[in-house]
Amino acid sequence: MPLWFIRELMALSLLTIIFYKIIKNPISIIVISILIITLISFGLIPYRSFIYWIPVYLMGASLKREILEKLFIVMENKKTLLFAAFCVLAYFVWAWFLPNGIKAEEMTCAQNLEFILFRILTPLVFFPIAWLICIVNFPRLKFMEYSFFVYCIHFPVITILGIIWDKVVGMSWDLKFMKYFVIVFLTYALCVIMAMNLQRYFKPFWNVLNGNRK
Amino acid sequence: MNKDIEKTTAETVFLSFLHPMNFLLSFLIVLHHSFTVNISYNGSYSFMDYGWTIGIQRLMYNVSECAVPVFFYLSAFLFFRTFDGSIISYRKKMKRRFYSLFIPYVFFCTFGYMKHLVAIEGGVISWII
Image 1 (cartoon, rainbow over the protein chains, first blue to last red):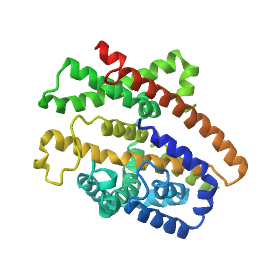
Image 2 (cartoon, chains in turn red, purple; image 1 turned 135 degrees about the vertical axis):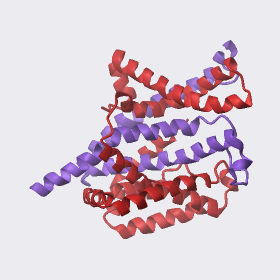
Image 3 (spheres, helix red, strand yellow; image 1 turned 45 degrees about the vertical axis):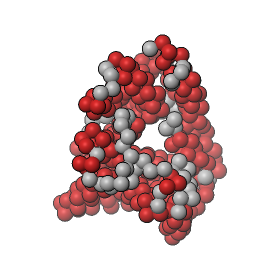
Image 4 (cartoon, rainbow over the protein chains, first blue to last red; image 1 turned 30 degrees about the horizontal axis):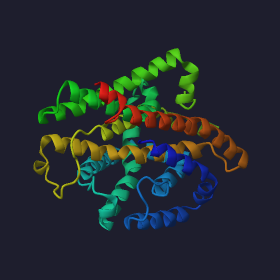
């Protein structure tokens, strides 16, 4: 189950008081992050551990309103925009070069380091995308409100749709390509439909499932 | 006073991106788990060594790696945005997290376990279909 993210988030939430003290001192953030990155590079901290994500979590925790304002002003400059666009493109090209699928115990230090650096730089690369969404005033559509539910339920839906596809359509090589995109869209659509019906007809139960999110 | 309003506006504008961003990230998560072939790194970075089916799915899989770090980053930002370091604030936050994270986690894990028993190879549904 991909819900390891929720489990690790709960662990990180419990350590709030400690993180609150750490983020008051930027040097602490850097020292702790370097230490954790070093341990990760040597394969001592697994991907699905809350410790692995402490550097990224501390980055988010230390993001302040004032920094946001400055970033917004900086993003309005054309040269900055071009540079940001180049960084986003370079990031997506870098994604191809990630050595995915290798067993954790077989990964080298360089491969572990590549992965953690990729993940640490990700929020920085996503900031221009977030800024773009704000500027374009992307509409808030109804189906966007069910992201948490979709995240929680998508895995079994993918499994079941995959079984149905294999039984009904077959497993020829050419169809695997189509299967991928059909399953992605069908999964999201089904999860949203389930969410909408649960919200409409079983509201108290929906509130529990959705964690009281609005 | 005006500076405070401007600051609030910048933050409000920034937070208005949350729903579309959450949608994009959850879509990437679905993309990340939907691959239909073995997309593991085979020692080569040449796209031609993978072919279109594996190559495209591998690229989508790797690009969608970005979703989890952004989720952690945003979670931290939203959590600490309204946390003042006091025990009262900490208790309030933990109570909210209990309902927003722990309860759904327990329910969906139980559901996932039941799905594993019923729907996977050898289970009841696979026997029927």
